[in-house]
Amino acid sequence: MKQTPPSGQAGFSLIELAIALVIIGLIVGGILLKGGDLIDSARLKTVLSQVNEIRMAVTTFQDRYNALPGDYDQAKAHIDNQLVDGGNDGTIGGDGLKSDAEAFRFWSHLAAAQLIPDPGKPQENTPDFGHGAPAAKIGGGFTIEYIDQGDMQGHWIVLGKKNGDKGNGALLTPLQAMHLDQKADDGNPSTGRIRAANGEGTDDKCLTDDTKQYNAALKKPACIVYFQLF
Image (cartoon, rainbow, N blue to C red; front, side, top):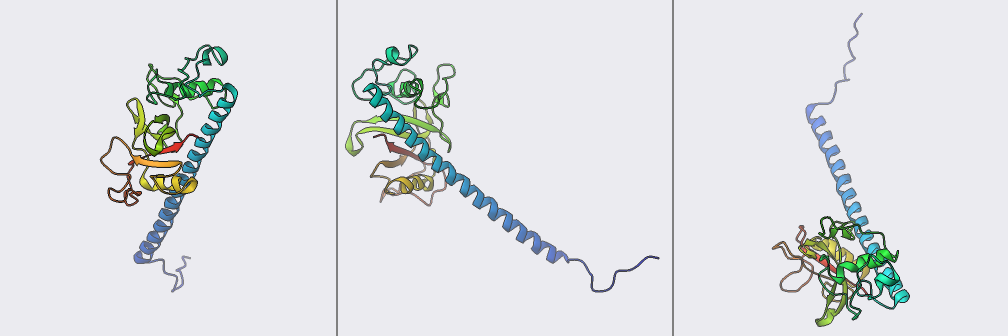
């Protein structure tokens, strides 16, 4: 005999179901958003670790060979006969992604000395990140640049996207760049051991025109970041 459900056991109304779905959507969206922030933060921390590993590798190289990687004029004889010697003038010259530049050979000298992981080989003699220069966990990669003017005179590790023979293409949002600066330096893009600048390949500005501070309202990639090597 068929039984009818007792009165008072009616199901959810459409309005109640809609409200429940909205709440579930907000919860899932919040989790995904927070998860994305955590992943981004972890990648930025890894970037700082990569930079410190490069610095330590260069210090060890100098202690061992009394020269700079890329600029070392006895690399072929003392490290690996497949390497190309540098000019030994105390500067790592040239564009960071140009195959015949000391700044590009910097990585092969360090890798051959077993001080950094192998950054890969250029494809069709075209250097790129992951193909001769190390890729960064946040995207793009690292190049070396010698700046010979102003208060930035010296060697810098540059974090950016490939831009021809250079690695100065816009990669990070201003907030990402600011996070790195605040985490490991003074938070000012124009001072300290970490600096930021407008990246190439976009009209968006990493820094504000008036105060030259991080353009935090911008949510799109616009920045390159410089890390002092020494």
